Image (cartoon, rainbow, N blue to C red; front, side, top):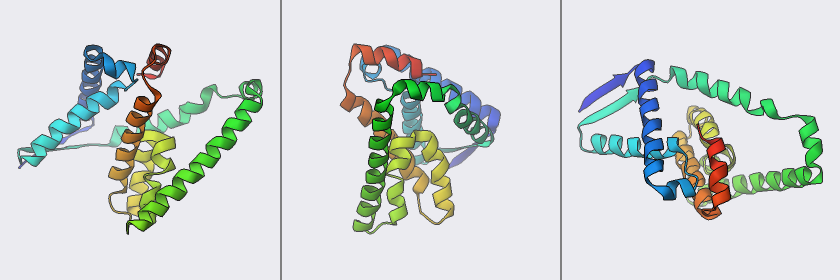
Length: 192
């Protein structure tokens, strides 16, 4: 099997092409736009399927340098809260407090259910966290951060499970939410 090792410049170029491919597919398939499926997810899925086919047939395996990944994840997560303020929280009033309480309860339930079901199936209960609040509340970024951490603590395949659960949560949430024109229009503000 041929192995292709890409440096950080090649990895960035491939990521940009995958993003553009995702945008192009979303323009051609209106259902993806209606369900607010992000371009990086669409392009990434196509890339993953192509890479899987190449790997499964023994033709090629590709590895990337993750130097820029760590840097950009740090930049993203440090900039998420820049628009938050106490003035904005005060404007939300009691509804913000109710939302906070409901969110905390759901996070706890997700983790209890995830660890409990993992134990029932004879898996490491910490793997249940990779199917709980880490991916379902934190998304791909949090999964990408905590997955390797849990693997370093001895939880086998934690990163793959967390990223798969985050992808499932993203797609399932979009499908359950349903295609609504107002919602579809608001999706564009969250896209890259």
